[in-house]
Length: 159
Image 1 (cartoon, rainbow, N blue to C red):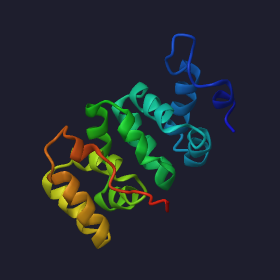
Image 2: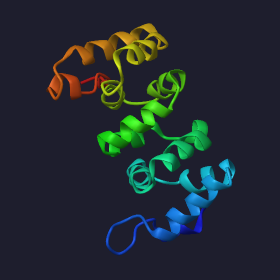
Image 3: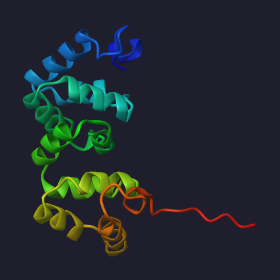
């Protein structure tokens, strides 16, 4: 585990520690995907989101690219809309489609609704039929409505 992660990535004011940002920046500059993945793998999605917001736009795109399949797309639900759009634009649609399949339906909708319609359609087309149908149904609800925000998965427990 990365030493900075063991210490916590936040300083006393609640910001991502500058030494951690510098270490991540060094991995990005060196194109060291292995070290980068080792440093971000233990991060919670909210911590990864805070790190993304602390980086400059070029570094964000490099982090997502170098992290590859290790990048937790759920972190995009934790970042500002501008940052989320930057990252979504940097990811190929097939990568988003793969990641969306791993997300809860409400998180998937949150990411899909920010995409251009053409890209959204391409991502949805790559999903299994039932999942695509569920997500399209959620996207049909008005923005910010409970229907759009709710999870469509459920667990039935016998009485």
